[in-house]
Length: 202
Image (cartoon, rainbow, N blue to C red; front, side, top):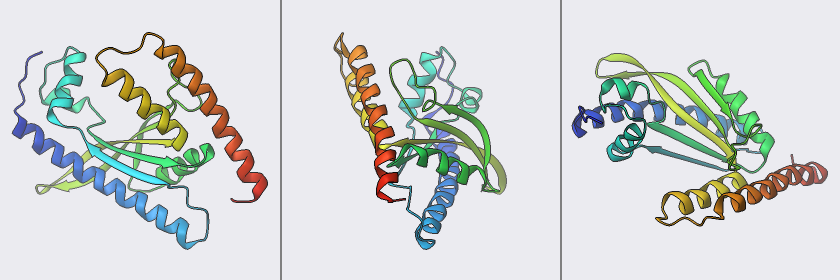
């Protein structure tokens, strides 16, 4: 991989992405406040956000065997990321529908790993959206990745990431174990909806 993009050049692009992320965050916060004001149960348990660092993006581009230049950046849609954590699985689609109805948000791509989990058991709904941002005296279209998942899905993903990406010597039995845990948590998410509906909590 040839590194043709300086850290300063990347930080300028990351600043543009952060503007886009904050635009989407404002829409999400507005939807959360609307749910609170209408007395409807608030599906937004936790909202997180991040901008990928220069080193993280360089590593990802290297894995793709691409040159680290401006053209490569334009192919990455997850430099700005928002993660929305819900209590219940059906809230994932409720939030998704509310977001894509926003006139200022354009849905570019959707990957549903809730309905179609990855082989290792990973579950989450991934959306790539685009928003218009006024930045340095010009209007730009900026991609932002939104991940929506339950607390159970997030717990699984956090532990799996810690074991497989932060551990130099991952356990050989880990894939089978994580697939088993994913099935258990999938049952948990389904039963949680049943308990909620029976209790009249929604």
